[in-house]
Image (cartoon, rainbow, N blue to C red; front, side, top):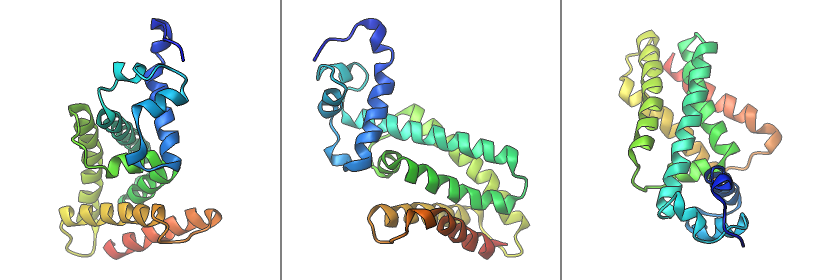
Length: 193
């Protein structure tokens, strides 16, 4: 172990986040510790505390980055897609893909730790985009649909799929995963047309 210089500490926060996400691909959130992450980075056990006073703040940071990444994907999707029903389907697809590619994000999002203001604001941005898409879908739908209920249904479906996937309650071969996700989200989308 060695003490970090000021110049090398600029990158340490990103390394702590990346190593935590890597750790969470194989381990549960309860097993995450600042000491373990420090050891894996070959830094002193005190070094992470410069950025995170405790494990919950690290988890909150992971949740913050998950929402930022999701928001970025949603914004990009809105620029590329003009059909509200396809956008609605992509809400679920993008969320599921984010979680499957980054199990640490899913575990952080699923945690019930208290969120700091930046994380709450990132979630508000995700919610604004979601609300706008859901509102358009409910307006264009041939059915009478309450936008708030539709939003809950969308999130329940996407998050529920991830929960079943990570708990190994559904068995899908990796090669079939994208097709399954596409068909699953299309099914929900067709119900609201």
